[in-house]
Every structure is written in C-alpha cells, then in structure tokens.
Figure 1 (cartoon, rainbow, N blue to C red):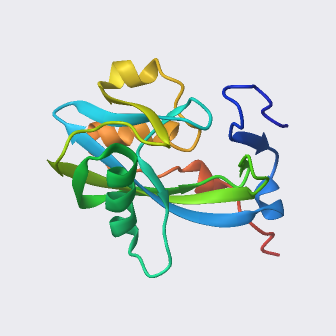
Figure 2 (figure 1 turned 30 degrees about the vertical axis):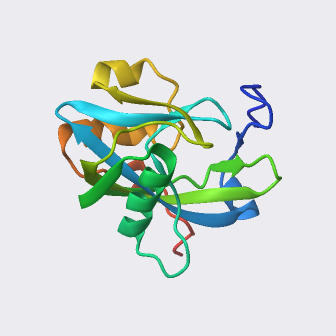
Length: 173
C-alpha cells in the first residue's frame, strides 16, 4: 500500500506492506523529546506538513545523543541537553520515500532532553514549532514513527512496543 496523499509539493510519503523494509536501506536517526512542564515540543515538517519530534539522521562519527541535540538546534534554534533515553523504534512494515526517490526503513532513537538556551522557531525543514499538551498533540497529524511514542514521553516512561517481540523475524525450526 502506498500513501499518495498530496500534502505539499515534493512531499515525503510512506509505503506500507509486510516486511517492506527489506526492499529499502536502513537509516539511523535520533530525535529529542523536549518537555516544558507538561508541554512537548513538536515541529511541523515542511516536506509533508506532518508533526514530529525534532530530529534527523545520525552523522558518521557522531553519538546518537549528539545528533538529537544538533538536529533540534538546526531545525528549531533551541539548544537542548539530552538527559535520558525514551526508546528505540523501527517498523519493518513501513518505508519512508523521500522526494529524491530514496527509500528507507527508519531506526530511530528518541532521547529526553531539556532546553538550555534559545527559543524554538522555524527553519528550512520546520514550518512551525509548537509546545503541546498530550490532548493538543492528539489532535495533530503526527508522523507514524513518533505517534506511538508520545504516551511514553508524556508519562515519563521508557518506550517499548511489545508487538515487536511477538512476531519472530525468522522461523526457528
């Protein structure tokens, strides 16, 4: 199944199918869950209009937590310091297709972070930054990879998807 819903010109789209990730490359990324009281920083992507945690690809020679801090600053102008891990996520049944044709299965790490300087704003990748309560975030179109993480973020818990452990990757005969 392919998500062909037009959002913005040159948008990022998704393909869905059982283990479709096997047809794509892996991309490792990191994101920051920055809370201010009970409000979480979410950003609206310029490439598809959906909301997400600030984050992006981990560069060679970079620690995952450093990538989360760097990406948050690059995308929003907000300086953050990572304080812990929320969780690791990936879905082999979803492939992200970028406007340039690259197809990837995301393996993402989400870190808790605190603001240490600056103000959340916009960039070439972010059209809007917003501090959201859990109820406000539930009303937004949040990217598929981040949506299941939000309850753990707001609750201050670790994220784990038990369905990932229920489906063996191979037959163990």
